[in-house]
Length: 453
Ligand code: ATP
Image 1 (spheres, rainbow, N blue to C red):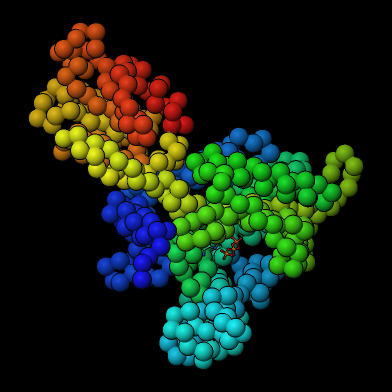
Image 2: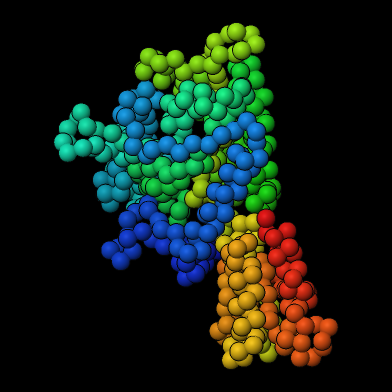
């Protein structure tokens, strides 16, 4: 059977991620652990750029949003109150023929007959609820009294610390608390590379407001979040705001959108933007008996704020960035013959390496010394990569394949050998156009920082 172009594209992306050190299977030498991934030297830079940019635009650039960093393990009472212990479940079905364990929504319905998507078997169990939280024990005794869970979302620590953060930050409504951190879900079927993992990271904002302004802020955050994805290089045409219909929404939500992206394996959720009303704070007020409310100095009223939550996945966004960036075009090789070029067209802001520094020849001491000097000049400002091995064209290709937007080449003109006027200038190559411009070394920092920030 011919694989679809999109399947082939996804296979190339997965293979590039491993080959170039973006993403590896966790515990690979022991056969891996399903649903867990390790980020290699380039993956960790990409992920960090994404998280830093999120933090910059969501926290630092906003006067009324502060951050926090909660623990992964929390008192079990949190998960009882939030409803996760009883209802954070997916319906699960077993295929008795091939023993596959399936999410009920994966079962194929052929003219009213339910079939296993793996083997086509029709002998399936009835769906039963499977709790997605990882259970663990705190302390030395493994009994009911020591049970808790790895957090399945970061949001709950924000809700339970609402009062503390409000007091220390002295913010007035509307204001937000942001957090980036790990979350864990024992997904029935991890799949589509890192898209559905068992360990992942979330970037969440809880934006507290007055009830009468809930819908206004929901619309506002939907637009802000769509703009965010465009600003990291994801085309608007591949982003979709899907409004969740009343019957599918959580009962406490008065409006929810999924921001979806056209991955090679289909249109899938990147982020949820939900107006959660005052449900979470009220649940914790009831269960803890503590007053998680807000006092309005002007009206002298005390009330429980409502909340709008944009909740994004770091790993899913990293995957979307790689899928969006992956491209193949043609470029001339050393002899001028056209060859296929693999290029990751990352937005410079997201690119793991911003600039490569290349001496034209490896065996010329002066070229090498000058190039190393330029590497040291740039390093405090951005992540650079020094490379002296192989023909210059090959070195450009290696950088194109990992999405480095700029390359600085030190040649004989830099040394002033051909034309005194060109001494202390270098070529600056652009990854996408492959065009080169000649710039002064003294201008490099300001030119590059203005293009990569
Ligand atoms: P899905 O319907 O795909 O399971 P969800 O609606 O349960 O996702 P939320 O609870 O809204 O997801 O979590 C917010 C965000 O966290 C998601 O939009 C996604 O980016 C990320 N996320 C959730 N589950 C996973 C997972 N298993 N792997 C990677 N990221 C995830």
